Length: 142
Image (cartoon, rainbow, N blue to C red):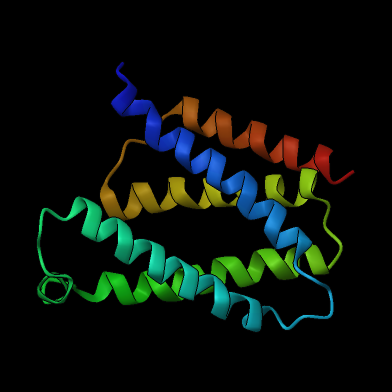
C-alpha cells in the first residue's frame, strides 16, 4: 500500500484529535452555535483558499454549478455532528469514553447502512466484530 492510501486516514485522525480537544474545551457558558459560526467562517475561508491553490485556475462560482443535494445535507450533518460532540462533553462525557462510545455506535450503524444501502458484504467476521464492539461498549460504560 502506498502513502496515497494512508495520508487521508492520517489527516482525518490528526484533525479529529484536535477536533475533540476543541469540542471538549469549548467554554461551558458559550452557546455552541456562536462558536460554530466562527468555526464555519474559518472553514469556509480555508476551503476557498485551498480551492484556489488546488483548483487549477477554475472559478469557484462555476464549480458551485455542479453542486447537488449532498453539499447541503453534508452541511446539516456536520452541524449535527459538531453540536452533538460539544453537548456530549457538556453533558459530562470524558474524552476517553464519549468518543469511543459514539464511534462504536456509529460503526455498527455504518455496517447496516453499507449492507442495506450500498449492498456491501456482511459476514460472520463482521458480526463477530459487532458483538465484540457491544461487549467493549458495555465494559467501557461499566
